[in-house]
Image (tube, rainbow, N blue to C red; front, side, top):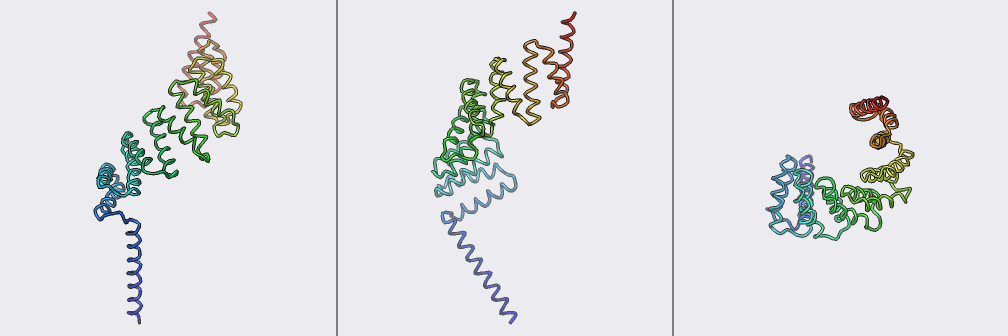
Length: 273
């Protein structure tokens, strides 16, 4: 009886193994055995942090012209490998664009466009292309969850391109929506645009509005430092001194503030002589 039960259990396990194997084969029906082996090896290389070897194997698989679905997934994986682990951003962009060419599925298109935007903005500093990426993302309907983030990134890209006109236009648009996630922060960036243009009166006005609204201490200190910098540049030394002094204990680099205070004190003393 015991032997019969054991035989039944073994038989059941065998049947489940066959079913599972059949399911895997049906899911991976476009895999030839060599491709399947290479995929497993590539995944093992990733686990072992041998990213160059994994990328080489995935690219070798692409040469064998796999089916569209598998090709799409491998191209995306190559984009991830080159972007995240190997820092080869041109190759990453190439493979993410391949994904876009292979599908019209919104989920894939959104995911790859976000990756392209991140690479262009943060790593390649290619702000023109980043604007194109973020603009595409902001035009999806219905609006994506990160719509507000895409808008502020477009504004910052214009700022880094020294395109103050479009940066101001984009930031003003954000400020017309009080419920916008970056409504308050947009005042800081708008002040920064005017600061870079040396339009100090407008910068001071915008930052005064910003400081009325901002609640995060680190951001308040950041803005006050720049306000003090304007007063220092425009020879309003007492005002500059007082503001620097007010943030002396909170500024990330105390030596910077102390040096400013010392320099301002000496300038004020020399004026009295």
